[in-house]
Length: 168
Image 1 (cartoon, rainbow, N blue to C red):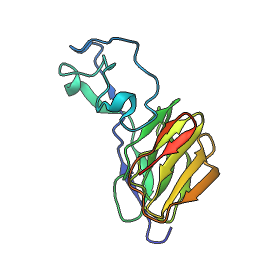
Image 2 (cartoon, one colour):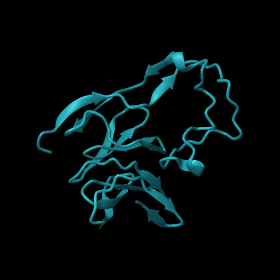
Image 3 (cartoon, rainbow, N blue to C red):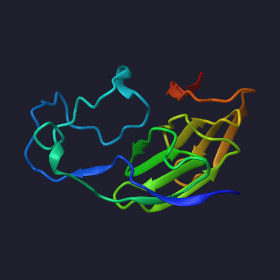
């Protein structure tokens, strides 16, 4: 993309070095996936987190940083989704990184910025773009499965339920 540059951007994935449990309790085993923005009844936190807490936050260290292609912005525009060991996030395109290593798995370019946080459901990544399209990509390869032109820039994050993609 013209005008692009590379920048090292540490994503929010960090490793809690302490083995001491936090002061929170867990009603269920921690989920392995966080597949949609505000998933689980619109909660804005992870109630199943038992490792990170007030007693362990000081022990966090950066696990990895990744060089990503950026156009106008030096940080990812969307919040990430983490599913099956892969981090999906948008900026000038949608990207997939290995969550353990930060290695790029694939990227998909759009004609506009992506502020929409991706939803990853049944092997498909759904998101909207400032280019007025909603996209569905194969989560493993980044190949476009379909796109839909809305006629307006999309900044909201999709929700997927019962085979229907909802986006504002």
